[in-house]
Length: 295
Picture 1 (tube, rainbow, N blue to C red):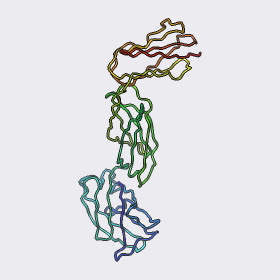
Picture 2 (cartoon, rainbow, N blue to C red):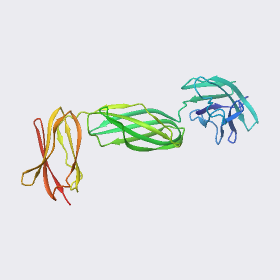
Picture 3 (cartoon, one colour):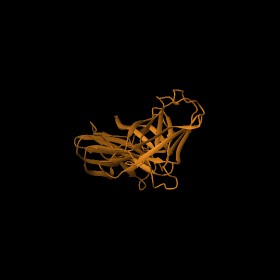
Picture 4 (tube, rainbow, N blue to C red):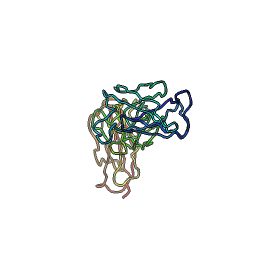
């Protein structure tokens, strides 16, 4: 659990000094300590990471919602406890004041506090952005995508900052949109110990405004290439391959498709090197492009 000390002063008004140690106890067990290197700044609270209340019985966790937690603060500068109090912990964030001497804010039981996760459409790409308020042992984020309610697939991994008590910003640009119009995303956050948790799901709908046929890539190729195309409405779509003399070589696609962005993978291992022409017909749209096979 993350514990943020946002204000602390000795009884009588004297400020804490660098070198003072704040130790947090649950009963007789010390669950977290921090030696000050500078005075506590209320706008940038001191972060102390606290573990389970009893290291000998890790299944008993004083931070579990519904439990009573009891803490003392030990200051090495005066060698005495300046605070002793109990609080019924439920969930979320709150502020508790103990005897007017130390103020502590309990802020999220999660090791990584995600405060935003958004998606923005940039032409034919989607920009994902997210922010964390705090991070404890954050290994990083897997970015997962689902298209038109199909299975979730991993599309990227973004490394985390590890440990941080300030806002961190992350972005990922999804350039490979194909296979539909409804794109869903979620983050799978991994701790350094291998445990993980999922973010909320965000969704963006992307419907092309025009019909388009793109240049295959790579080009030239050997022997596999991809053909990308867009449909503005539900259509009967055909893509045919011709040789340089105009004779049909292969029918690559002939089916009805919903509006959206698609990508066709073409393996030309059975063809000879040379220049070929591919043509797409969808409703009243017709477009032709060239591709070069080099073996």
